[in-house]
Every structure is written in structure tokens, then in C-alpha cells.
Length: 61
Image (cartoon, rainbow, N blue to C red; front, side):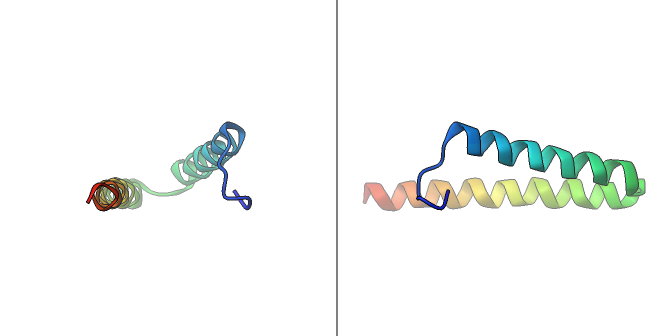
């Protein structure tokens, strides 16, 4: 990504890293903390999607 181009391999590498971290968290966090992490991830995903949509809107106008 340093070259401003995101390749399929870079996306796969990042996805694998995230899955690895999530598995580690799932194995070590108690259920209440897992719920909080799940809520944080869900809301972060919504924020990211909203931001991407806003960026697209700005490109159109």
C-alpha cells in the first residue's frame, strides 16, 4: 500500500491478520468483553461504510 496501490495479495494479507487477531481475542477474552468488542467492530464498520458513501457522494457533486 506504500505505493498507493492496493493489490489482492495485500488485501488477503490484511484480512488474514485481522482474522488471526480476532481468533486470539476470542480465545482469551471473557464473554462480556467479547460482546463489547463485537459491538465496537460493528459500529466501526458502520462508520467506515458511511464515510465511504460520503466520499462517493462528494465525488459525484
